[in-house]
Image (cartoon, rainbow, N blue to C red; front, side):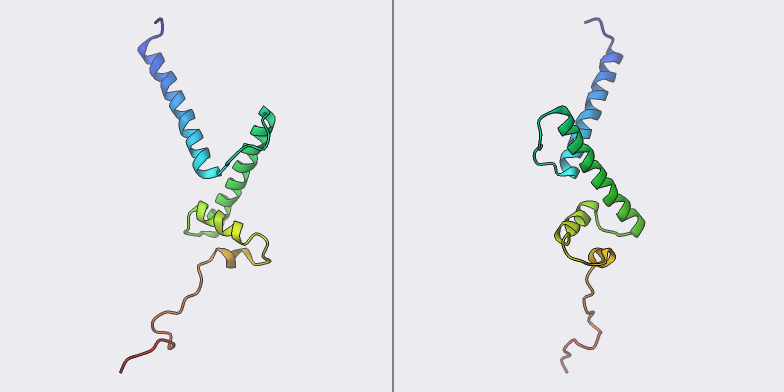
Length: 107
């Protein structure tokens, strides 16, 4: 009861930032379970997931891809063992348009 209202509000604001950080981790890093239980094992797994996410975000930025980072990561996971050019894996498939000559035309 000795803390001022301003101090309590500042503490709550800090706590809320921590909650938002953990929410972001759950939504973006997709860590389902931790491999180890020690502090070092948990921190190492979180840092590896953050580094992988940052590499994917940098790839998205540098290649100017319009898809979301999570969608891009999903495509990379599906094509992980295929030997392909990275830009081909991330670019949308070429679908024939309606005027490419292969479309049936009713007369």
